[in-house]
Image (cartoon, rainbow, N blue to C red):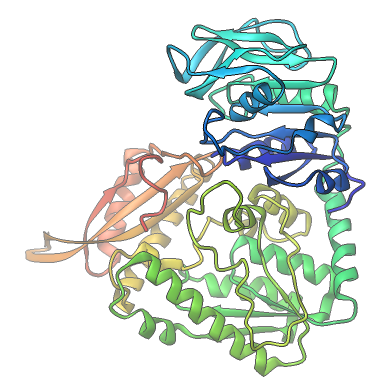
Length: 512
């Protein structure tokens, strides 16, 4: 990214909420980049940041071998903010003492706030989200406590002379209602940022970067129809026009009418450079009898690459491979202190037999909400930019058990009914993601005057700010009744509809 842009570096110690911290900073119009905790001082200096944040993490600073950043971070003359583990690490590295408290704090706590630069604007008494087994027992020299809770004497600390600050609580989560003051004060008052992270400016920069990288060469993009690949295609098309070719692989696992919608949007933009490959029968045959979810993912990823590669070889004369990789993909697939939750086949996987000289990833540094904002900026249809999140393996992982043509039709039809009724009811803003799942359950029912023994479809409707946690949406009973009756009446081989009322955690959003 551009060195001229204001930058905050977030050193990653494995916090569950890293990406949320970075997004909070970017939503404040300051660019934030997540780097491994052991990033060298030379690399940090080269990026010319305005400030550094030390993230939380699952380790204990008292354990031998626990993650530590270079001590030189505190000698760069930059403001430093430690969050949870990051605050404990700062205290320990600067001569303070961290210990196991008599009583630990988890969840919401009442917190008393003293006047300070970091917590300016917060009420004298507020609530904050705590999750810690250790806390600062003795402050380093030059520090003072600026907040405390019933069981945590140092809920926040600062050394204003050196611009070192720490919070034991989590300001990034919604459970800390006044947490935004921490970021606002740190970014603007302490680091001196002006706020130059704007999507309109990013478009100009991204177009210039793409042209500089590609020159007069040709680029190939796998267009899946999802938000990320669609926005990548629109951005690349704006930057290099007819030098871009897109391959849309219809693996038969798409939502109802999705292929037609993609062709309607991109055929006018790309003309003969849009290649649509119908490989639905091939994917179905490869998935026959496969039950295990991760095996499904690997088969679909492998087949996609093979189909894509075959078409690329047919097109010929291609120089770069473009991908719709976004920042969470990079973070979750690229190591660091955080654990990998799922495999991402859009990071890496460059076909070895294709003569590409490099990879173009125009969205690599953007979060999903920023990708959507970019799509709006590029003039993509609202319905495509705000399309429901959809997994790479498609409907294959919304079918519990083996995948068949009959089961795919059930999921496609029931999913369409659910989406149509929620859209008609104007409740799209209530839900972040909604879809149907064909469970592996068959049960007895009565259809007309006859006994039936058919499938059970589950409805999944959730709302979330960050997709790390999610709550099920309380749809009106009348709407649930309409959806249930329509699915049973209009979708063959279904005689029962159930509603998933499990939050995340303990459940995930998807069933597989």
